[in-house]
Length: 301
Image 1 (spheres, helix red, strand yellow):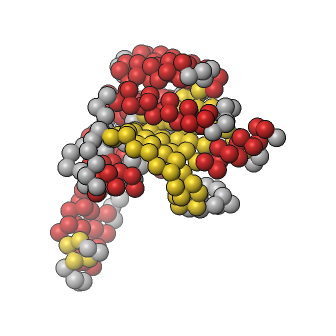
Image 2 (tube, rainbow, N blue to C red; image 1 turned 135 degrees about the vertical axis):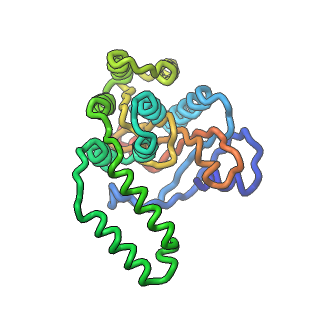
Image 3 (spheres, rainbow, N blue to C red; image 1 turned 120 degrees about the horizontal axis):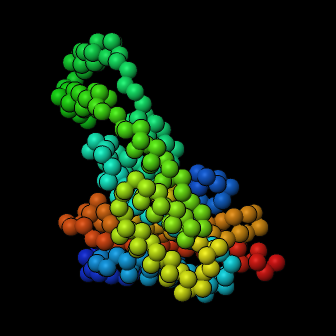
C-alpha cells in the first residue's frame, strides 16, 4: 500500500517496476512474540497489461532473490482468488450474495460462518417490525444525524438488511459445491487435476484461469522446483483484503519451525481505491529478510 500511494502521489508513469528495501512495522497478531519492526524487501509491478507474464515475473523474482540470499530449501504455496470469483459467477446465486461472498473470501472463519448463514432457513420473527419501529422512534428522539448518518440513511440501511434477510437463500447444492471446491488442496498438479474433475462433473467451465495456473506451474518447474515443493489450495487468499487474483507464499523452516519468508499476489483494484482515476493491473511481493537469514542459519547448523 505505501508503494502504491507513493507512485500515485509522485505521478509515477505506468507501467512501472518498483523495488524497495527498508524497515516495516506490523503488529503480529498471530505471533505476538515476533518483533513488530522488521526489514522488508519488495517489488511491485504496476500497470503491466499482460497479467500472466507479470505474475510469473514477480513469482520468479521472489524465488531468485531468496536463492541469491543463500536459501535453497523452501516450498511454494499458490492460489487464485479469481478461481473462486469465477465459480461464484457461474452459479445461480443472488447478486447481493455473490458480491458478499467474493468480498469476504480472504477471511476464512468469517466466510465459513457467512456461507452457513446465507444457506440457512429463514425463520420469521414476529417482533421484527416492533423492534424496527422502536429503533426509528429512538432515532427521532435524538438529533437528525446519528453516527454520521441521517435518519433516512439509517432507515434505508435497516430496510435493506430486512429485505436481505427475507431474500432467497443460497441453494444447498451450490453451497455443497463451494465447500467441496474450497476443500481441494495438496500437491499443485494433483490438486488442479482434482479441481478440473469436480468442475467438469457439475459442468462449470473455468478453463481459462485453470490453464493460467498450469502455466505458472510450468514456470516453477523451469525454475527447478519439483512437484513435491509446490502446493495449491483453493481456499488460499493470503488473509489480505486487497488481493484480487493470483497469490503465493514461500515457506521454509527456522529453529522455531515453519516460517513464511516471502509472499505476494495480484491486487488490480488497489490503485483505484487509493485515488487513481482508472484501474490499473498490479502485482507484487515482499520478502522478510530476517526470516530468510534465520532459515539459512537453520539449514547450515
